Image (cartoon, rainbow, N blue to C red):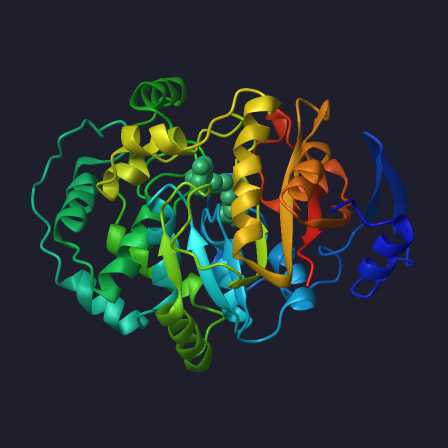
Length: 403
Ligand SMILES: C[S@@+](CC[C@H](N)C(=O)[O-])C[C@H]1O[C@@H](n2cnc3c(N)ncnc32)[C@H](O)[C@@H]1O
């Protein structure tokens, strides 16, 4: 199936987006085929605020406005939205807020621990009562965490880790605690360290402490968990919480390689919105080692499964199989919005590799949509903190499965 013609692409995209209001339309030639690139500030301008329930950090996550844009235009209530590289679950949480059903997959089991509790949400009273019932022992742990935590904070963390069960209240507390482990403000359990989604190693944390002349101060974990819980829930009400719970009950979660998702039925997904790992820029397993420790996830096992592709050729090989799976699971007439960035300061434009991959799997490419932002604004809008390593332009390749 070839790419659609420029006129057809314009017609398809302009059914949903006001392409004539300041949208620049460029042609992109790949091999003998022409594709269309639409550039505008599509989904970050004049949008309503994202719901506070999204506000947990994750490496290379996107802002909720991005999936919302595509969910709004390509699906209706009750449809099924999928993310094969779910991360913190931005696509899935936004879909659930918009009454869509969800299918979530990420090879790192941490992803499910971050997503599922936000679909079955305890009240602040329930959280407070449960936290009061945790016995704080003088617990030390199997690894040296003294460079991150005051000894009394560490005892609280270890007690939480040891006593949390898998009730929905405990799962919420575990999710919030996971997010509060390390960071560089008063709202984290640690002393001053890297941003929360990038745990420093024990060795580099010692260097940070020495350089800044600090020792980790005592932090009250219960207060921090309650405060963050209130903040996450501040835009919710009982009706939204019931809605999220109902969506959660029907949700499918998995931690498979996204090339191998035979648990997802053929032709069952209306829309996929996703961003894959970009070559080896972000080390998801390393960045999450402390979060994995807290959740008894074996980092070395996860590391083996996470796709770290050194070059575009191996990345493309992997994505070829991902697209075959996406084509199989997408309903006829369904859509895939595949977010990629620029790598090596724009020298490698992954969208140009993605277009033929999707087409080979049987999709039609409706175009590439670039949400234009200046550099500084982009870094805020996208919540991406890896600008220095070269991912600064985000673009969506849009595919359609024919009816
Ligand atoms: C760019 S992040 C996704 C971020 C997500 N869009 C969000 O907003 O949180 C890519 C994710 O792909 C996951 N991943 C890496 N290799 C994978 C694979 N082979 N199969 C499934 N997930 C994988 C990583 O664990 C990481 O969470």
